[in-house]
Image (cartoon, rainbow, N blue to C red; front, top):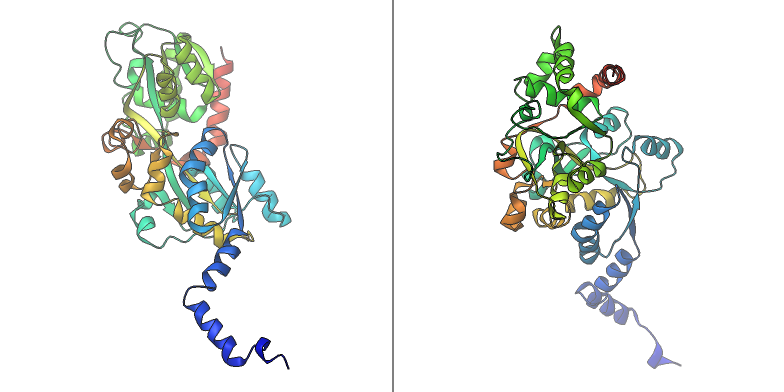
Length: 361
């Protein structure tokens, strides 16, 4: 009975062979991938907007894996620690992490190793990646100024101190590291390693604060948020303001006559880490490798003017955008990288000295 409906062994094997040829199995794989999600924490705002376009949606389109973005604190160290210690994970991978914070996470053994294989990762400069951290972008601290206030262009941080040639209202960042870096450059110290040699030598810190003493009476605003610095320039409340390249450029894009000088600027990397023992670490590693692709890094620059870490990205970036980015060759060669190890080791000391200096009036 029921011979017509019987599924024989031969019929089953025939069906399976058809599936492996490409009819059944891909459908099963696609459904499995589509059911997966990856929760990604980022700094929010323009980062979420830019990465949705450059990373999140394209990754879903290629893999079927849905990215769920969540906003985190600017410094997620405490969140990493809490998740790893409790084994309760609110997200699977985190981006936009400053390299100094990443160093701390690595030293504290709070992160999982990455997969650095493949041509895209190979193209990333050695100082932008390690076993536990991959930097996909660069932000640079530059000198920004309003072109409607000065007949000549400002060319270095030393111009901040030239109150005769460049008379105008000044703003400075209320942060020890950046102000000390700027002060020593203005005092004739080349950027990079020379800054740290001076600070490690006798009298080095005093030299930096003596230089800051000279400009302190001219500072009208001490800003403590990046958004505030852009607003000060845009509204014309100040004429000269050291700030991040993206903030100065946002003021210019809003119509303000703002320009920057890259000469003497100093940059930091931002990138990705995976919490230690994260349940979806394998998917996270796959996603991070996707973020190393030059076409994907090029895509975020239309919304976020950070410099891509993959040099090949510039093949996909319009020249008008490229020349405004920190890693554009002409800009990069005028700047140096901040030594995260030095500032991590000396953070408490520098903050104490700077806060005491500010309070002296």
